[in-house]
Amino acid sequence: MSLKVKSVNPEVGKVYPICGVLSDLEIISQTEVVAKINDNIFAKLIINDPEHLKTLLSRILDTGIFFVEVQEISDEGVLSGFCSTIIFGKRQVIDC
Image (cartoon, one colour):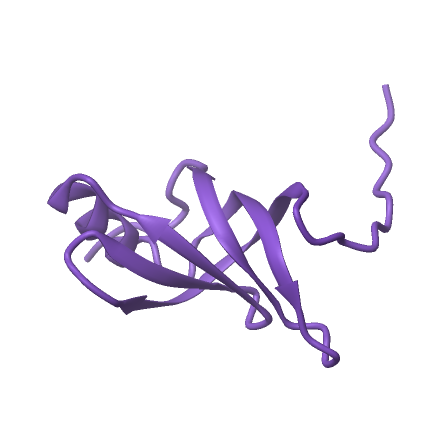
């Protein structure tokens, strides 16, 4: 079985699984944050549980798969959208 990577030109309104790094979080309110992914994707997240926010804060700079519905694409290639799901892998860092 082989794995192939396909280049895709994203379209507004479609959902894409994006493999990347959670670069930063901007807390908008207790229930809404904006995740910065790979330094060029900004995705809103709805947080229903304070523990989920703690988990996200602890996973900054970790890789994951982010399911993002694209809402806007700038001329510079910056994407904005809504992230419905994040899948993180097993932590690769040992806490000291």
